[in-house]
Length: 292
Image 1: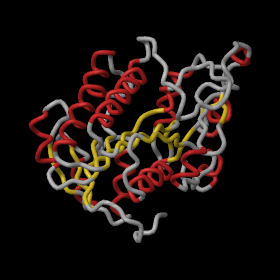
Image 2: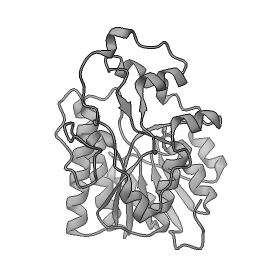
Image 3: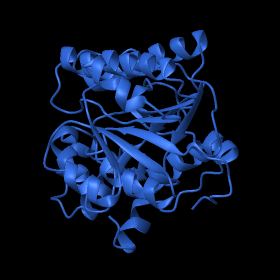
Image 4: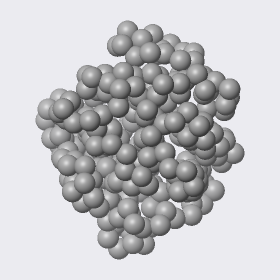
């Protein structure tokens, strides 16, 4: 994927390593020759990380005293941990904003020189009338969407901290992450029940999340840079439903109006600066390869 000849960090701290993204990312980082330290809470998936070769450090974003030892000797942080679906606005802010800010402050104090933050394409507001660009300001979110609202706030706080005392901040705004047996596609179906089936989603396969993170790691600190990470072919909800072998939406759902550009990403910066090219340029290519 990336030549080890390119200069990269020796030890990387990964948060959220047992989560949906982290559990697929850590093996790829290990395969790239990186020493991975995983900040985890006790749970059934921790032993699997240890068996794969990751160093395990127990801790919690909301316990600042647990972060000092986790960050000792670390050059790079890949921050994935987040409270996702099911979170109240208060819970999302506590973990996704305050926990992230606490980790960033501790990382600066520990001498971290590269801080990669996994954000979401959902930070962009509707009404752009084109795919969202990194230069577009994240939009305020209604309280019914606490997750993206907390990510907007976390991004702003990280940028503020990086400008005050740089620690190599790089933000990756990920499309809808899927693949390799991840149940994410099926879990999100109830949340999009009211969508028009012709509405498109911009997705990114776990393999390409791994590619993007590794490219950001090996290309060194890119202070304050933001990259949209997604595949080449946004897919309609109807097509995704068919690939997932779920019941097709009823015909009456084809009529409600919607923003045809909402959720779509302009990925030119990642292509030009990181050399990012999707290994799975569409959901169909992942399905055909048995990687869906």
